[in-house]
Every structure is written in structure tokens, then in C-alpha cells.
Image (cartoon, rainbow, N blue to C red; front, side):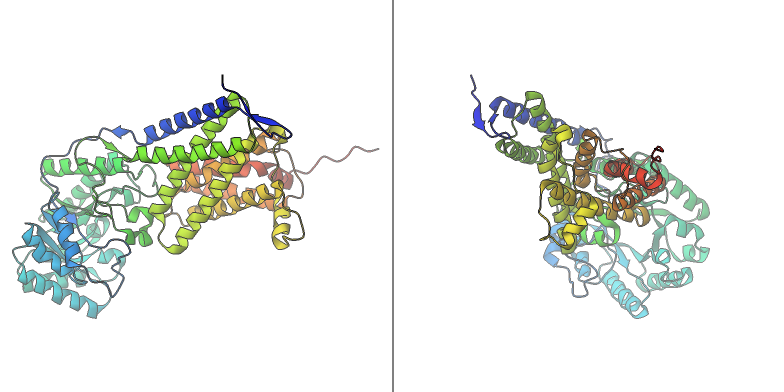
Length: 559
């Protein structure tokens, strides 16, 4: 029979090894269920046989960026990249001929790849002339490899040149190279472009990205967006062939309406699009061969997540067969179990022995919380774009870890749980930390204030500048649930409180930002709905302060 070991619980407590075992079992069951669901392999429609037609290629990896004026592509990197690309496609699209990218043409010839050679056109006339001269020279030197020359990419979308100028430049490059030329832009700009531009190109190149549409489309509906775009452009220019110059779906990033980035979504869209293009005889280029971390600076997490391969040059999903959103989920589950075990050992070693039912609760809390911590680490790794952002992510992680380590056991105390200190008391201590003693109530209050302020900053950004910002659900779920739970078990959630001005202001801002986010995103965005729920949970402990702001106390009865 297992005997209890004596420890202290208030005065004297025994750690029950059976309770600890129950807690570990509950944590393991919770983690297995959550990660099994997250990593479940899902059936995805099969693509047609053979390779994809073409893929966008840039050699940037790690901290490389096209905005670095000193950057020159490494020919060995290009050689290794094109060796990989040749296994999935027979064509690459380049966006510019400078920064050493010209080395891709002879290497493409070696691997039997055709090249859509891009000439980058912007505002700078001198820079444009250099691009044209270099692009024309490369096209002439490697005529056998060049499928066509793309003169300008989304120049009209950026408002950097007129359609007339682009038509003149396209006609000039065609004269000087004798090769087919095109201009690439999003569908709407081709639909409003003058026929002069269409007349200067051999085929019309359109970009169709269902995720970035004004009305974003889920991967399952992405083909409807493509069909509509092709039909509309073809109706306007029936004499010109249509080429899809960019299409794809990101594997990570913020949800936009029903468009949810994931590996399954990316595989579903790309496979379905390849089958549609094969059936309709449509030529196309996928964006892109490799994830490009530098794009996160411009387009958030999603911007760096469009590749068939990740930035480490590893295939992100199999081209055939079922696909998992988290193919390494077993490793992540093991990491979660390790974190949960450490949490439980710490709780029990601190003298918090308890009934089997309460041990099971702590086990489930540890398992769910540890899973959220691993998801938070995963997101931070993918989303951080600078040292400063990495530091912020690390601080938010420390905040989540502190909440997970301290608050679940406190919840089990019921009405005896420590109530976090009011915001005013926290601010007083921050102004003069030596003047007042530091206790558990103050520590919990400072933690809650830190969580509230950081979550409010995120909420206001999501409300007023949302396009490239993610919903950091995993980072705030644990403290939001835990602090709301403490307010509920202590009966403080809805009790009217006067003179809690700071709490009432924070609660009001949470309510307003949540409403704006839900209106902007629509209820169809599940991530926005979950973030709204987190905001409401963060608001819950201060609903009494909000009531106290608007509801006057009843007058005292006359003597």
C-alpha cells in the first residue's frame, strides 16, 4: 500500500502519491487529446500527376532581405535551391535580375528549368533603366531558358507608374529581346487598365490570392475566386491568353474572415488549384518556392508563410496523401507533458496535497496550460520580426508562465483565494516600491495589471490597425481564465464597486475594443470570436467597477 509522505499544509500536510499520479495521468490525457486533435491527419483532395507549372523563386533566407543594398545572392545557395525546385516544378519566376539573381538563369538551364524573368519597375527612373538593361542582357544571353519577360510587378497597384508608361516599357523590352513579354498585377487593375497596356503584352498576367481579397475566401472556396477573376479578365480581353502569375495560400498567419492559414488549408488550395488548372488548360505560377521571413516585416506572419518549402528548405507538407497541421505534434506533446509534470511537482512539493478530484483538476489545468505555452512558443518563433519583438514575446511568455504556475492552485481555495490588489494599490507600489510590503495580493495584482495592459495594447491594435496582426490567443488564455475564475469563486465578478476608476477605465476599453474587433472581423472569424471571449474574461473581474461607474448606490434610508 502506498504511504503518504509528511509535508506541511498550513501546519501539517501529507503529499499523497496517488493524488500526484492522478494529476499526472489527467495531464497526460489532456495533452494527448489536445495534441492528437491538433495534429490529426486530414484527407486532402489529390492533385493531378506531374509537377506544378511554375513557382516564384527568391533565394533570401534567414535575415536576408531584398531591401539590403549590399545583398548579393550566393550562387551556391541558388544552385541548392534550384535542385530542390526542379523536383516539384519545371519553371521559376524571378522578380528582378539584380542582387546576383542573374546567376539563376544558367543554373536553371542546368536543371532543365524555364524562367519567367522579372524586371522590377518602381518610381526611380535611373533604377528602372538599370533593371531593363540588365534584364535585356540576361534574356539575350540565355534565350533558351527564358519563357517570357515580366516587365513590372504590381506597379499600378503601388501607384508608381502609369499604365501608359508600363505599355511603353513592355513594348521596348519586346523589341530589344524578341521574347514574349507581359505585365503582372492584381485582377482589379487589369480590369481597369487601358487596352493600350493589353496590346503591348503577349499575355495578361494576373495575381489571384483568395486570402488577401477584400472579401477573404477560405481555402475550400478559393477556386471560386480564381474562376471569377479569370472569367472577368478574359471577358475584357478575349484576344489575350490569361496567365495566373501568383496564387497560393499561407500556412501561418492571422485569420481573415473564413480564410484560416494552416498547412491543411495551403495543401487543400494548392492541390485543388492544380487540378482546376489542369482541367481548364490554364497556365500558372504558384507563390512561392520557399518561405520568405523578410516579408513578415511588410505583411505579418502570413507574409512569410507562402512557400512549398519552409525557410530551412524542408517540404512543409506532402504533395499527396493526408496532411497534418502539426506533423511534429508528438514532439510538441512530449514538451507539453514535461512542462505539466514540472508544474504538478512544484504544486505538490509546495505542500498543496489534496483530494483525488482536485488533483485531477490540477492535472487537466497543467496539461491544457502547458499545451498553450508550447503553442505560444511556436507562434512567437514564427511571428517575431526583430530583436525588440522577440524580447516582447519573451516577456509575454514569462507573464503566461507566471499565471499558469501561480493561479490554478489558488482557484482551489474558493472564497479563501487571494484577491489581486486593486490597480491603484499596484500603481502606488510601482511609484514607491520600498514604502509598502510586497505580498501575494500585490503580486497577483501586478501580474493582472501586466496582463491587462499588454492585452489591451494588442486589442487596440487589432481594433484600429488589424490587417497584419495575429490574434495571440494562446498567450492570454491562461491568465484570462484564471483571473476570471478567481473573481467568480470569490464572488467579486459582479459586485458593484465605487472608486475603482482605473479598473472601470480598463474594463470600458476592453468592452469597446472587443466590440470593434467583432464588428470588423464578423462572427465568421473564429479567432476573432475567441479573442473577444478572452477580452470578456479579462473584463469580468472588473465588471463591478464598471457597474459602480454607471450605477449610483441607493440612498441610505432616513433615520
